[in-house]
Length: 195
Image (cartoon, rainbow, N blue to C red; front, side, top):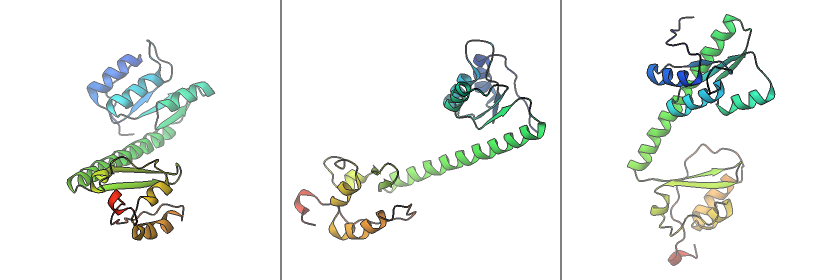
């Protein structure tokens, strides 16, 4: 398949040490291991501490084991016996998914740096949660004494100048991702509360 194995481990504890030492691109993990740690717990710790993804190769598919495996956020779960081509396909997809995730995280870091460097205020409407989230320099730019009252759409819209509210309200009521930038002029302040 063209991959290099950098270590074999019998225990979860050893898997964590080997992952830290060798920094593999991917860990293939069984559920039941010798030692104190299960494969699911070892995979969870490897992911959290070293951001290395895992694929489980196991003969177990009971509901409680699947729930434990889900908590470690694996990139795959193959039941034994499996075919080599199934393993190859799963490894390839896991590596591609991991690479896409890392690229998304890199872009998010770049965006955060740009927001900080430009001293921008950022707000986002989460339609599923029905809540606004603000960040960056939002509070400073709009001279908010406190965060928005309750994070709701109405509270946010009521805090806007009427011109901005008229521009933004129809967009938010569409109930779908806008994927656009909307510039706002001002938020109401105590001196400008008639807006």
